Length: 248
Image 1 (cartoon, helix red, strand yellow):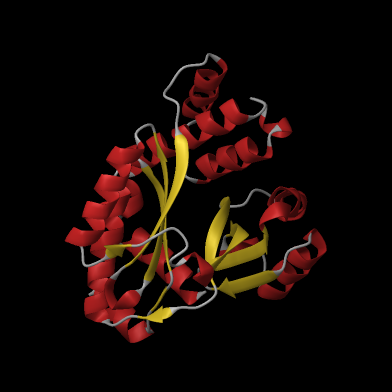
Image 2 (cartoon, helix red, strand yellow; image 1 turned 180 degrees about the vertical axis):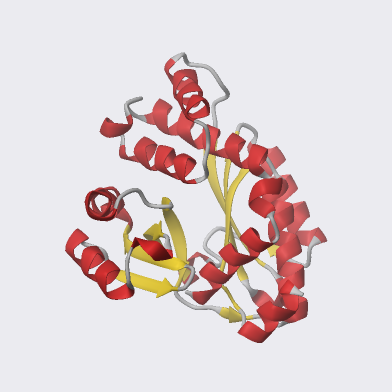
């Protein structure tokens, strides 16, 4: 979906990754600790933990931070979190899914609702936009990992469903339940990926103009500022002309 790669480009060009690196590491640590608490603390025996660790490495999170997050789970430290998914609408009716981990459901719901309202959106009921997405595994490789044909062949042999290649890199999709197996097969063939994670992949998209995209970016950034929010997904679609105006 073009919206996905374009949003990743926005994040990169706007320097969001660097600006929020400490916050990103905090959220990754939370996911690692939760995954280790819910299963085996050995990543090789715990698929969710292994994916969390791979994602942390893909974000250049220091090894010490990763080990510390796992030890926190082993030692029974940290808060007890529950996972919650919020669904709502942004400008132009764009669908928004917010995945959170919280130790206070009321606090998080209030903050998320307020953020939607203040930034041109509306928080909906569970399921209000979920039908416009499907759960998928996503594995990203850099452009220099190989040409489109080679990556496609490797992905098919690994059991993936689809590949989107561009000058920015290769995005490989697979069934959510196959992510660990497909990622392992690709790693053996292509080496470490840049990112390996479960995502909500849009099945329908909403076309956005410049004003809509500007408001959407403010909404997503505001949601990402919340320590309880782990990930925000939208189904926007925007033309190259709109993206160029945003970049200016």
